[in-house]
Image: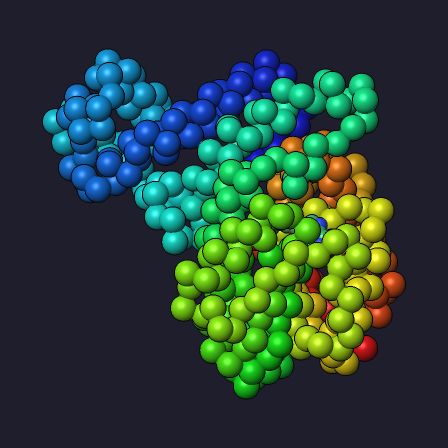
Length: 345
Ligand SMILES: C[S@@+](CC[C@H](N)C(=O)[O-])C[C@H]1O[C@@H](n2cnc3c(N)ncnc32)[C@H](O)[C@@H]1O
């Protein structure tokens, strides 16, 4: 939960410093395979020296890593000097299929986020940007890993839960994924709804290249296409029953966002649905300290030099109105995202 100045100011800063080191501890444990190995040992746990031996690591360092992990609450005491994972840590750090898995987010925060943050002073002086698409191939792949856990939940449960959409998808719908990245979501949608025809678009050449390879290697290659588009969008009229945007709205350059939304609106058939899962930025100062906006506030700061502007509820509603879309559903998801559904009138 977000700390406020009501907490002891010294504790506040020490807690944040501890958090910085704890995140690095998690990233190291993920990258060196330590969490995976400890998870495999189950409740009896692993002895640090055996763990080091199995992974080819320096035993005294692994011993301190284990003790620190126990201090942070990531590990618990197992049998006879062994350490095991604390409850839930297998789901949060090891099970890549679990939507709650945070390991890719943790490692990308440490690897890519740190590089970005180091260049903030320069960008604060110049006002320049280093956009999502400037980060390169590895970054695009890593983002696909970060969002992967959510794709099945969105494709099957969230889309199936939109009133009237389940029947449309089951019968066979034309689906557009705007900002498809490496195609994880559009592949899951095609798999969940076997009569659907799916099309992903993105402006990131690295993402599109990986998306094409992922689609080709999937079992739905015949029903999924991927297209590299320019900032102007897709330019296709009334072609789709459903458009989805997962973690995309706040990534679209705000100077062209109204035009992109209009383009998406035009590409929907009358009665077509736009489904969005994205952050909503607080509209006032009280919201900045409301834990429900934690992730939105964090994202806005982390993605500042990407040129991203996380939209407020007012901005989202203006975008819908300008695109001829009527909001029919708005729901906070896990204090992280807002689920938004709009229909073309
Ligand atoms: C955080 S990523 C999410 C990717 C994907 N939806 C997923 O679930 O992994 C945001 C994506 O939006 C794309 N994007 C940004 N602006 C766009 C635009 N105007 N049109 C299409 N895609 C855009 C970015 O290139 C990036 O691939």
